[in-house]
Picture: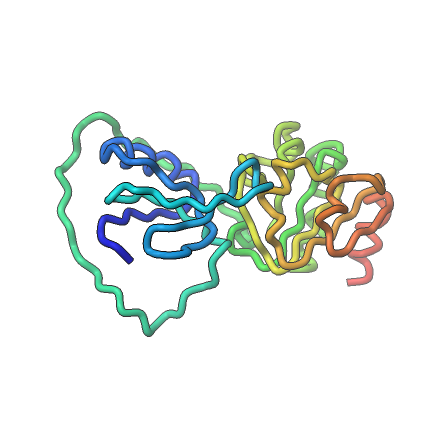
Length: 229
């Protein structure tokens, strides 16, 4: 690929840094790419993932963030790229790193989990969320996610949030429990290999993207499912 390419993963940290790099270089940023079509052509989602844009910037230098879940895992050996050490200009003194508070949990991280169980606002409160979602996640060895509505309601911390304003995931299996399927949530999980939805509303939007849909009361269905696993 061409020289002058600055690449970062599309994470919260990169969303803070990459635009600053692009501004200093006076170039446009290409955010959250899904594929590389050629040395200067890329695809990226727009309108919360409802459309895919193909972009071909004319800038000689390119600043790009990459949606990791859109690409297959790279081989550990066999690549031909070289690693070249570079020196920076040093600290400009305009900002200072104070600390990082990183949540630690025994379950798999959302962005790397093969199975994710997510809960929505229908779980009522934090205690109910834990009572219903965690036993199922434990049985499956799954990561635990949540909709924005559940996070805003205080059921779980915001690092559980899946969606356009949360984490973008693409596990082998995504189980959506009591999630209606708002566009911003679908943008974060619709690339999952298999989507299973449990919701008592048969008209819930989540069923439009689900591979397997179960219409029923989650407070009955999920415990029954846990008992059979």
